[in-house]
Every structure is written in structure tokens, then in C-alpha cells.
Image (cartoon, rainbow, N blue to C red; front, side, top):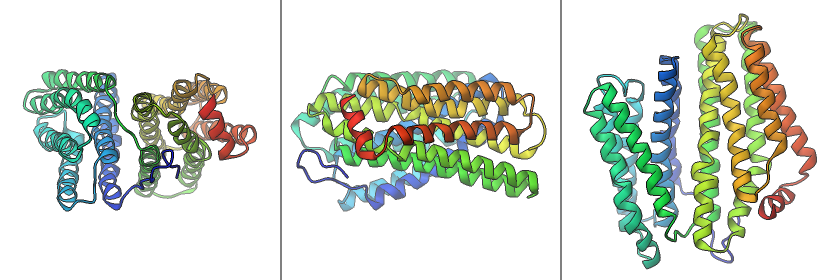
Amino acid sequence: MSTDHGATARRVGFLELFFDLVFVFAVTQLVSLLHGDHSAAGWGRASLMMWLVWWAWSQYTWSGNAIDLDRRSTRLWMLVASGAMLGAAAAIPTAFDDMGEWFALPYAGMRLLGLALYWLGQHDTTYRAALRLYLPIASVGPVLVLAGGLVDDGARVALWAAALAVDVVSVLAAGRREFHVDPGHFAERHGLIVIIALGESVIATGATASDVGLDRDVMILLATAFVAVAALWWSYFDWVHHAAEARLVSESDHRRRGHLARDLFTLGHLPIVAGTVVFAAAIEEGLVHPTVSMEPFAVTALAVGPALYLAGFVIGNARATGHLLWTRLAGLVVVVSFALFAGPRSNAIVSTAGVAVAIVAIAAIEGVTRSSPHRASSVAAHG
């Protein structure tokens, strides 16, 4: 792990790993929410829920990067927050139904507790000045989520969408102040959440294969999907993870580093994680009928999932270096085109295989052009 210009590098602690385990369940529930409603409104509600889950995790990632998590009192409150998030995650599939309060109450409590820990655990005067601007705005979001959980579905969506808008405003306002970011710890936390999302996709597809009954076609599709997920893992951890951390380390100005951490990780990793969730939903749908033409929802998910995943890298690299990742941009176009063309005309095995080949090709081409993590880090750091 890289150090911050001579400072002692932090490592992700066991408490943070335990906290992240709750998000394995939350991500699984997001897939269930997608399966429950294939309409455009269903996609919109799933996207809104993805944001709420992601923002909760991001909030604790920023605070965990800045405060001492080894204090016993902080550990205790972090465990309380984990339990609250577990309750919220359990209610995700029904959060837009009549039982919205079962999601909103623990979720809002967990978010507000995290903001309190952020303030109480940080004593640096510069950092506290930034928090004085950020915390009052950030506190409005969870209150709106709580209010949304207590009203009917139409008003609930409006209030939760307003919470999303407030979250965006809070992070943009915070950019006017100076947040000190430990690059190694911050990059490691985001690498772990990508692992969690990819791991959830493996678990979800394996469980679905077992539920529908194992036969030759199911096993072929399961193996093909695993190749695609393994290639997604490779496309992140072969060089992107190292390059992103190196770029953060190379920025010596604390305010610009905070902006870069926000854009490259907090915002830039959202489509990466969301894409993994959507891809898992596509494979689960395909496993039900692996040898027939894919349903419109599965076709859309098969195109959108990998496209979001690849777009996250393209956007992040453009922000970090000012350059486009042309291989990934071209791969994104190929994946979307193939999925939309082949999905309705062929079966899930063929469609998934084509997507897998495209992702493997991206990893292979980049493996030739970027011969080592060190070289990749140099490219990302200097554009």
C-alpha cells in the first residue's frame, strides 16, 4: 500500500470489513428488487435504492478514513450502525410498498449516527471547518428518507429523490473546504466494495443455478457467466486499482485530493458497483431458461450491467488524467450492441458468451498495452 508522502499508511481494519459484510446482503436485496419489477418505474426505484445504499456506505468510508476506529466507544457505535443497516437491507424488497418505514427508520438512524461519529471523532481544526459546512446539509438527506418512509408510495419516491438531490448538494458544498484523505486506505476500501459486489454476483448466480436445477445448459451458462465476472475482476485489479491509488497519492494539494477522491471513488465507483448488480440480475434471469430467447428485462440488464461497469472506468480515468480509455469505450459499445442484437434472437448462453468474450478481450488487450501495475500507475498518475 502506498504511503501519503511519508505518513504512516493505514490499513482497512477488521471492524470495517465486518461493516462491509452487511452490504453483501444489501446488494443481494437490490438484485431482488430488480427482479420484482421489470418496468421502467421498477428500474427507477432500483436505481434510487442503489444510490441510498451506496451513499450510506460512502458516508462511513469517508468518516472511517478520518477518525480513530480503534476506540472502544467508536467500535460499539459502528456495530450498532451495522445492525441498523442489516435491518434496512432486510426491508429493501418491500421498501416501496406499504412497509416503507421498516427501511426508512433504521436507514435514517444509521446515516445520522455516522454523521455524529464523523464530527465527534475528528478534532483537526481544518477538517472540522469542512464538516461545519458539510454536516448540516448532509443531515437533511436521511431526514427526508425517514419522512418518505412514513407516507404513501408516490410521495415516498419524491421525498427519496429529494434526499438524493440533497446528498449531491452536500458533497458539492463540501468541496469548497479541505478534507484530508489517506489515499491507501481510501483506495483499499473501494477495492473491497468492488470485491463484495463481484462476490455477490457469484453467490447470486450460483444459488439461482442450484434453485432451477443443474443440467448441462445451466452449468454451461453458469461457467460462461463466471468467465465474464472473472474478467470484470481482472479489468479492475490488474491495474486500475493500483493506478487510482497512485493518482490519489500524486495529488499533494489536500483540497484537490479531496475533489479527486470524491469524483474518482465516491461518484466514479457507483456505476462500477451498480453494473455488477445489474449483470447479476441478467444472469439470474437467463438461468431460468438458458436455451431460449432472452426476455426484454434480461436483454436490457445484460447490456446495461457491463456498460455501467465499463463506463465507470472511462469516466473515472477521464476525470483523473484527462484521457479516455479507448479500449474500454470501444468494448462498451461492442457489449451493448451485441447484447441488444443477440439477446432477443439467440439464447442466454450465446448472448452471455458474447459479452464474456468482449470483456476478456478488453482485459487481454490492456494486458499487452499495460505490461505492469507500475507502468499503469505511471500512466494514471501523469496522464
